[in-house]
Structures are given as structure tokens and as C-alpha cells.
Image (cartoon, rainbow, N blue to C red; front, side, top):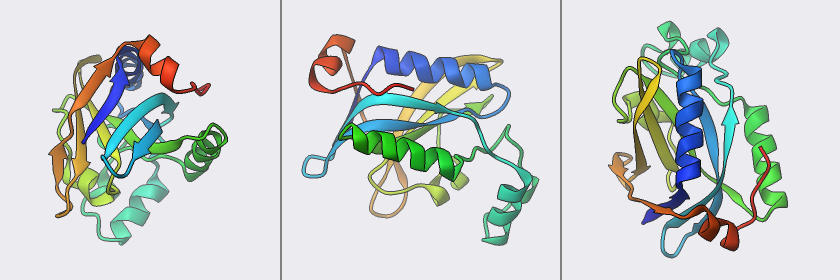
Length: 172
């Protein structure tokens, strides 16, 4: 299992995460997924606004996500369902799928939190960008295992021209 992406994808995620600082930045990973080999190929990064708000926090707290009601955008992110559905619609038009999510951890390591794990979906790639003092310093990719625990998922960085030759690019 691995995620194939380009340096341009990495640069866009890191720049967006740095721009969102001191809040968490977030977005969707769009591409192809081979269920047989568990290989994912990233085609586009859909940059989104962090939609974390009081109503989201209260809703999650009521559903048993400890501490969510006291969290802010500096420690949590939320993807607006309208943004998710629009990204999914655009991906399908282009014969692609949402294959993962990325978000940043301001002034923290690029390691999933318990909240990240609780809200994660199997098979998705989860890229976390560590941002320290407004600068992206690390990027790691994770995937849930059969026990609903995050494990590192390797990333294969390919030249941008190779990615474009294989896959159409979405506009974002």
C-alpha cells in the first residue's frame, strides 16, 4: 500500500497549512484507488476552509468525542458537508474519487490525534502537515489498519509530468 503524489501536491498542502496557521488547515485528496493493491494515486488537492464552529463542537461532544466542545480551529478541523459533496461530484465527473483528507497540526507533530482516529474512515489516506510558528516543517501520511489504529502509509513522490501523463487534473 502506498500513496503516489508529486512534489507540487506536497508544496500546495504545506503552503495552505502555513497560510491557515495558527488554525488547522484542511482539504481533500482526489485521485484513483486500486482496491486490489491498495494503491492510491493523488491527482488533485482540493484546498478548503476549516469549517469548525461551535455547533460542530457541541454536536461532536454530544456524540461522545471528549473535549470537542472546548476545542477551536487551532486544534480541530471540519470539512463542510457541502464542500465534501461538491468535491465528490467534481471528482466523479472526472472519473476520480476522494481518496483521503489532509489537515495541519499547528505547533504539533504530524501524528494523528485520538480525534483524528475516531473520525477517520478506512482506506483513506490521511496526510498531516506539522506547522511550527507559521512554517510547514513536516508532512506524514497515515492509514487506518483493521483495528482502527493509524499506521504510517508510504508516499511515492513522482515527477509532475508522470502524474499528468496518467491522470487528468481537476481545477481547484
